Length: 453
Image (cartoon, rainbow, N blue to C red; front, side, top):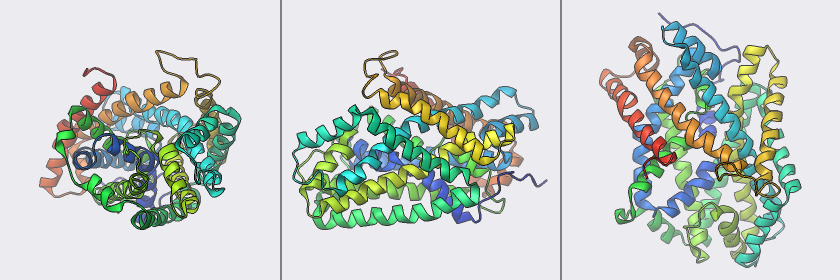
């Protein structure tokens, strides 16, 4: 029997609108900020190969599960995880999955907006030629001065959160869809421009060798776990964002095909980010193993030493800001949809309420870099605690429950109808979500909690 439920929020205007939106959700600071420095820390090519294997074996199967749950439920993640377990005779405790995603997304949005504010702040910095001809110590001082100024960080945090709320309050087609149709092509074009700049002005051959010549002697167990975690988190899985986006997906649209395209586009953009960043870093004689400061310190110094560095540095931080925005709107959407459905609020009121609450919590994260720097809980400051609880606890647990629910609770008649796969491919997906994915996520989960030593 065909499922005829429709989302009260509307549907994507086309399959490609959904693909752009979900890719925008996946492409964010994790791809353009985190992926290059993690590759740098773990030796380059060998890490990338392990990462790609994890995308195929873990990321795509979980994405398929999350989209099919969303499309079947046609509601916000919280209400979907109330309705589907009741429909199929499962326990009410599965509601935890919906709440985990929304709460984790809320926490991520609160500190994500602060970090995205840094990228916005760097646009006028680079445009004014602030880093041209500077020493590394001066670049570090500029970044540290930004972190030390709560008022500067509050301004950019407010600008970013306001832009996110403005897009979300306009709805699925007028807000989310229009934004990704504009932002994603611009993002991709800017990234290609940056790669072209790296080819002409940077150490492109050395960067290619670093990224695509694997040296497995540099790989240990920790690198495998990091690659697994990066593959899982880069696709925005477990936040409820993909589930919410899936609830707006037409029944005629292929879940496996869409999942493959989204994961492929996300991976291509992550690799292009590496090809944009490493040539500049290596040409400046800098170490690609620079950790989280790779973009805001190391790369900024590199731009300052290269021809047309101010122009292309400005384009890069615009790129980073656009990538952060496409992710942030997807993270805000599940909580907004829940308030519309449950409270009966109009979308503008719901989006404004979520943005205001996340903005307020985000103040705690920005103060953690200055005024509240000495205040810690279990050795973690406010921002570190919010990040740890969301990304190291709630997301792995949410992903685990997602796989178990799709693999063991939803009837095969439902999952076969939603996925419409050949029988042998469907059986392979079922083995992955029932056994391989839960085992892999449990390993990542245990490692993130420090249980593996």
